[in-house]
Image 1 (cartoon, rainbow, N blue to C red):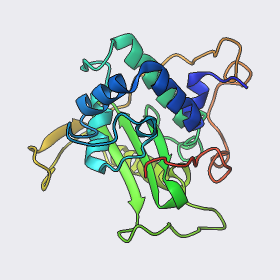
Image 2: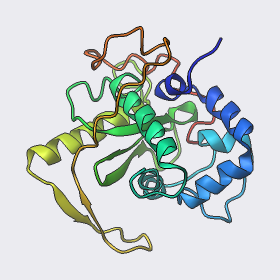
Image 3: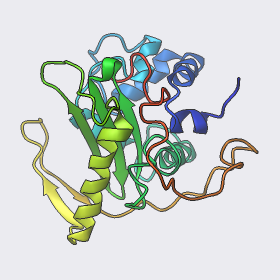
Amino acid sequence: NYTTVFNALERSYNQVAARLAVHVGMPEVRRVLVSASLYPPSATGLLYPSASIGALETTPHRMAMGMRALDWRNSDLSSAQNLQDLERMMRGVVVRGTAAGAFASGPEGVAGKTGTSQEHRDAWFIGRTGDIAFAVWIGRDDDNPLPVVNGSRATGGSLAAPVAARFIREARAAGLTTATIDTAPFPSQAVPFELQPQPEPEPYDGGGGWWANRSPGRSAGPDPYAGGGNEWRPGWMQ
């Protein structure tokens, strides 16, 4: 079966990500991972295909830094066109994909990606809105699986994404548009940011594929992929 890269990212099809990484070449993948500050140059395992689906440990701080580095307005990781396409994919995650349920009631203008580790030990949502890049991680300090809630296993779409949506929604409702985050104990200075929405990208028509066969708009119900087998893949964010 074939699928578009847009659809694969929206639904967290990790097999597609791994195949794409092999096609591009793991040295190039490693360059991007290091340049985006997701991993230090000394990190081992970055040349293995599993690195492309998050099999190496990292931190929420590094994930937020990586999301910031993907901003097409001020990044040199790739061409502006490539980064704009990636942003459209991440908007699809929020509008149609694994985080659609969490963002069904807003806020608008968020691009991001969910993640769920093996055995449901970690739930992630990494996103950006305007000039703020952020990462939400939910897990246990003893590395045990997260508990089952309402009969469902924890996933990035069902657990971390709602936290991100509520944070941005309530911050905007409170009139918070700028703030300064003290990044201590991280080795960097405090970083100012703005809580402004991303410009809404043009919808991807899929060339007659998945998106073209569905009406534009948000999912009105719960995340259709959370706990349904499409969110979790072995090795994701381990």
